[in-house]
Length: 233
Ligand SMILES: C[S@@+](CC[C@H](N)C(=O)[O-])C[C@H]1O[C@@H](n2cnc3c(N)ncnc32)[C@H](O)[C@@H]1O
Image 1 (tube, rainbow, N blue to C red):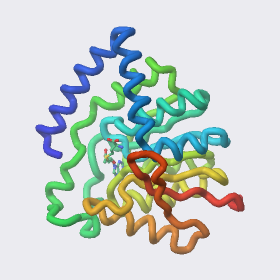
Image 2 (image 1 turned 120 degrees about the vertical axis):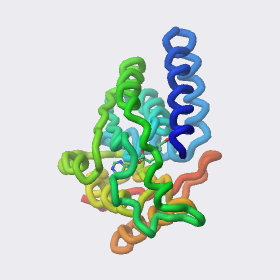
Image 3 (image 1 turned 90 degrees about the vertical axis):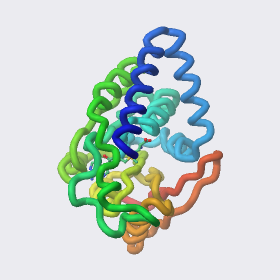
Image 4 (image 1 turned 90 degrees about the horizontal axis):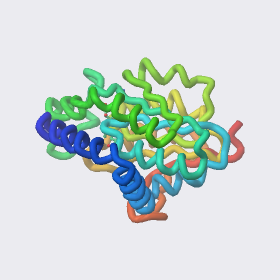
């Protein structure tokens, strides 16, 4: 994803923000989001946890595409839950991109530069939260610095979409114990040829646990996940 591509996305979102300023635009957009949710197994898994206690968290937000779908589903089924949105909002942390993260024909200097141009996203997402009465919280910074604050938090659903081996390892290490029994963690990049480090980190983490990653194909877009066992304390 080049800077030029990032810039085009930013401009498209600016136009969308203006469209949403009208009541008609706002409700049309809300309807479109529902269509996206209906095609996504990640959202089906989220919905299956919303009766449980605990909040919702996403690690890897970029420009908020998956976060907006998550917010739509939470708002429909459990609007009191908090939705935490964690990202550096300036791309991958320096030196976090390892050899293990380089998929077929991918170059480290290019991969390192991905997702850097999104400093406008926190403010845009705050407006989105307000507009749709979502209890959302932006958590800006590298996971190594921000995730420790959740040590005593409970989550029913965790969405990981952070590409890198080290990032997946960090997120699982800091957050999996916060998942309530029956809660779900989804791994967006598991099995992706572009991000081989994600599967390696997830498989490594669960090698010594009762749970194993599974794939859900409930909706058009499949999703890899783990549901925390009911015996978990
Ligand atoms: C693929 S993008 C997320 C895409 C997003 N979920 C969507 O639907 O468009 C990956 C994001 O993870 C973030 N990220 C990866 N590792 C991180 C880390 N260790 N700390 C903070 N952010 C990280 C990057 O900044 C990037 O925005």
